[in-house]
Length: 135
Image (tube, rainbow, N blue to C red; front, side, top):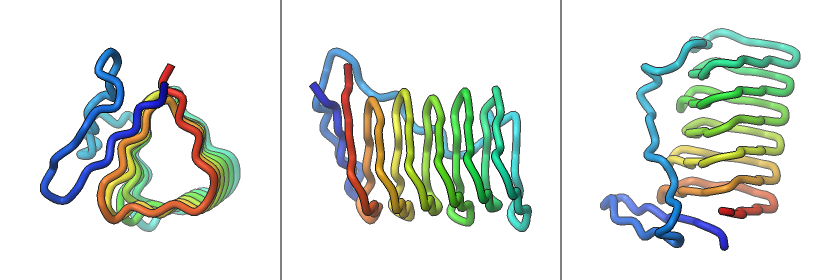
């Protein structure tokens, strides 16, 4: 059974699976152990065993063993792999999240999505296939 939550601007939501629900999004990034600031560009594969807050740009695969937060100015051109993710920026590449993926209103993804839980805020966009398997 999949768990998809749709959020509208008035913050109402429904949970598809009451037994196991997605964790709340932490978008402030204060729990990030690795911060890539606006104006910073990383070229090549980038990996961290800690949480990441990305406000800069990554060209290459991005792997995060914990929570990934991509700010409104953040972008990735390449595959994104993380435990949990909150996306406010842009991704051009496939997204694989083992936990909960939050697409905020400013998120834009061009690529296939595979996640356990998906929370989509009104205004978010993605172009590609989406597989949600909340097992």
